[in-house]
Image 1 (tube, rainbow, N blue to C red):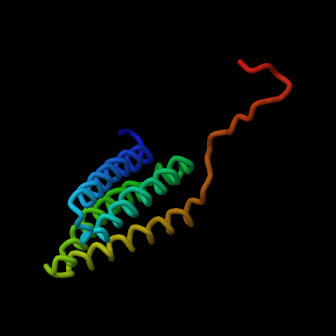
Image 2: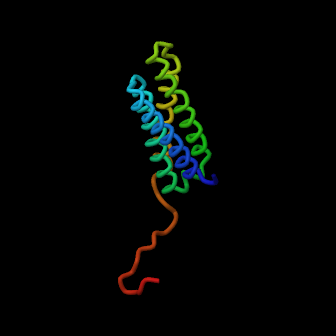
Image 3: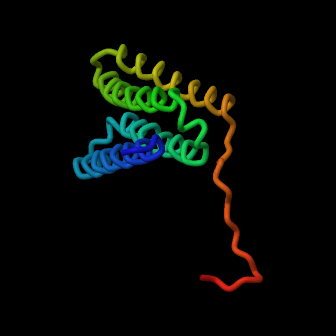
Length: 137
């Protein structure tokens, strides 16, 4: 994967597939006890990562920054910590991992806000609009 946007999108698709599979398993078993963890996998792992990928696809300056890579790895770490952490907390195995994952998730969003404020949202590529006066090619 050569671009940060592609990495965010591909990883979000993998997390979405995992979340959907988990949801089907919960439905088949009739046990929805871990649905909060499943929900966080879908929300942070799929939705947030796809939003981040879209931002970087639209903002080449931000995508080229070192912070973009840090943002990617921090987001993956947040998902990989918070989801099992929530599952462990629900099962009564302690809340430390869930708390750590929550802090990582907050850091991910804070870094995203910083990157937006630092770089703005802008594409350096011109947008070609079709002309009504020339024939389509």
